[in-house]
Image 1 (cartoon, one colour):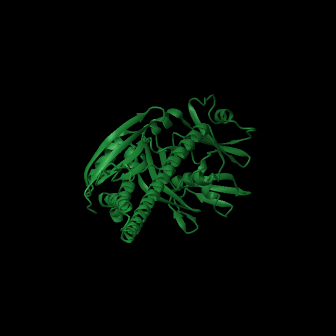
Image 2 (tube, one colour):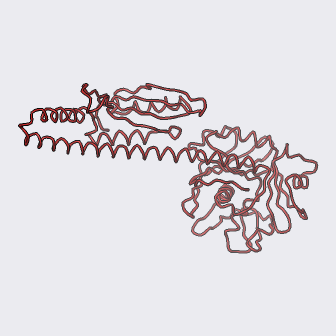
Image 3 (tube, helix red, strand yellow):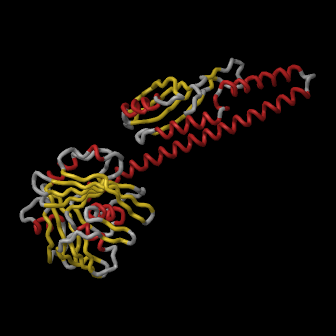
Length: 400
């Protein structure tokens, strides 16, 4: 199965669904994480598949499925030359149609290990999965358990109820031998309950077993969607970094303004005879001093604190584009009086759903340093499906 996913995914949900009959099934859900070459797993929940699974998925990690049990047909097929999904399905289930069944198979010595499940059974299951958790890989049957055997040096490896035989670093054959033993991988011990989820996530990360599937095209589409999602997150982080760079730049400007004020005061004392020049310098000094006094930018601690709090609370679905603190109307060279939006923070960003912005606004209102928070602008862009918004905050200087 070719995925084409080029952005690294550190965490995935691995969901095993075991069908005991047409009406009954159980599930086992784990979070599998990859850090460097190390893969680790922890159980989230397991039980009968009676209630919707949506509440179990607290995070927006991509999802890897493994389907097992009585509703999955699995057989070893021999002597199939130039296998295609249609040819393999008819060898597995006579007179069957790829419009009715989803199929997956893997080379096994001189034959194939093939598994199939009805599409409606899989589609019913997918209706239970939240849209935020993109299904990036699906494994039908127990063939993927062989990925764990390939990590072991022994020629014969017991994985769950299968005794896999290897030849030339490939799975050559298997025997069914019931076992409830843990599997040792280096310093890790994988329990029998975790083996299916672990093997599915392992093969997603490493593609150690080349498996052919009638679902390949959909998995490639899903992987591309996950790539776009990861890219959006990366761009959002880049946007936050740009904001932080802007903050540091503003701090540098404040420091330079202070230096200019000091230089101007020295020049004023040295050139008392140049009244008009001193008057001009005095006006510039007053304007700059007003900028410093009215703007909270000289309070560098508060300034950075507000930015950190806003960045930390920003939902993953929102892309920040600008933060403006105590906005200035006009410029120093203008003869008009300078005006500042004192004790205000203006947040600009983009989001697909207004409810997400509203929920974030409710969170911001809970901060002790926020006296008032309102959405001052919200404009929808139907071409990009993103809406641009502006939130205005009135702050009181209290640091929590």
